Length: 167
Image 1 (tube, one colour):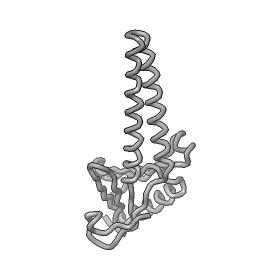
Image 2 (spheres, helix red, strand yellow):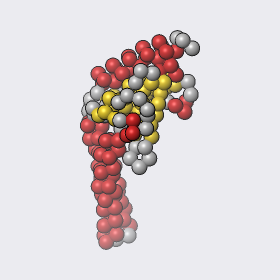
Image 3 (tube, helix red, strand yellow):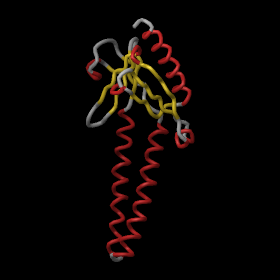
Image 4 (cartoon, helix red, strand yellow):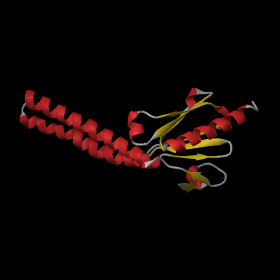
């Protein structure tokens, strides 16, 4: 858990209790990078080796180098994701080069879903999807513990119903 000052977050008010994502999300994304890079390297090596010549098969190292670069980027991206609950809205912050901060007012939420695909379930992860009155302000929080995702869904649904009742 992190706390952010208004100067760090760009949002006036009291300090926030920021929550990060589960480390398992970083492992899942890195596993996908390695698998895809491995497949690309083998296919590239076989095609170039058989069609052009064995010397050209060395270009199969390009996907491996790309995987090494992506490995580092996945870690930086994972560290950039965080969310915080405030009295009237939910804040979601992400991004390394281009920081994006999404503010989702509880009263605008129409649907809160918890999803978990087969890979996510295998690694004990879930995703919370927030659907709002304006499709442009929909938001997603990936890589949560399933119990935390359900707690967040229940809390956001409760707060959304309470805030929208006054509209």
